[in-house]
Image (cartoon, rainbow, N blue to C red; front, side, top):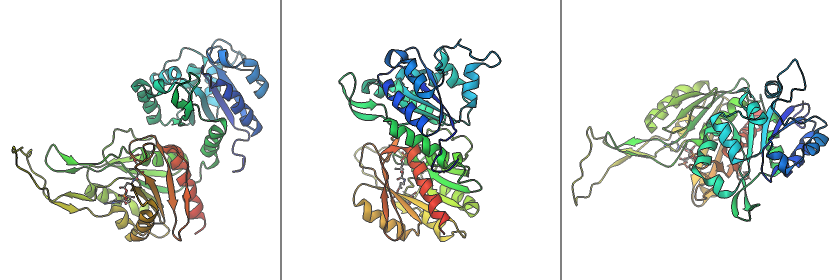
Length: 408
Ligand code: PMT
């Protein structure tokens, strides 16, 4: 395998469920086969209303699995064998129904049974396709979040006129985007082997009294995605996280903190052994000067003033104690003058790279699953990355860090 042909010889299990977007999976199948992948297609009965088994068989030159009880080899159980022998599993399109089944572990046909037998270490990519109301439904959003927490890569859906003539999100990612995401998942596996990576994530909470705090809108998703992507690429990862609702990504050493001072202490402890440090946390710049011992009482009509004192800048403290060869990355959450503010943070904090995100966009920054960031390098070069999932953004960032570290 070379980096130029990461798919050559890889076994891809392509699951197709019943959406009109199934016609695009024929194109996806063809592209994957042309790139040298060994594609094994598993279709639900609903999928076969939209695209024929014969089409997939012709494109892969392999029989297509459509029935749980269809056992081509008497010495092996087909769905277990397929799930365990695949290098990657891709579900495209994934309907709301299929996603719901995956989230709760229902195995009632050949595809869902295969999916339940996929080993934890096998990358799993899901390309949803559905009506925008179905996508926005809290049940679907909850199911997608469950899958994400389990380490499943969920591709963002596109915006446009849907098959039902509604306009909104819900279009399946295009086959070329899916191929790019698959390539990305393979091409750099192992390039962080032997590296220790420290990631900060989430908000900090600065207490005012036993029940109140000053916080911010960070969900931790960006930092957790970075930790997850670094582990997949072979790094040993310590994730110092403020309070979030997220589960620890598999294989990551998670240290939970509440305040900026606690985050600083944990980072200073971990940093000397780390080759790469990435500050994705939204750290409070200030904390209340005094924390009340008991709940502050409301006094009707009386204003109160809270004195705030500055927190230490964690990432700047880490750069000023930098170990030899350490590569340190900061984020910049901006609403205006993104370019200038990022350039200023690069210099003032002594960073090797700043990743800026325009958090005024509804689809980027705080508490969403996607991000659109710009990388700012010393010397003034910058690179815009497209709007993509936070995991794909994380992978892109790690690719650039690995390249920059190999040049020093
Ligand atoms: O968590 P999500 O919901 O996924 O949202 C992701 C994100 C928007 C939080 C993330 O992409 C992001 O931009 N993180 C940095 C947020 C931020 O606080 O930016 P800043 O411009 O205020 O800080 C610049 C850098 O200094 C950051 O690396 C920050 O971690 C660091 N910093 C800031 C203050 C401080 N006291 N100590 C720090 O280390």
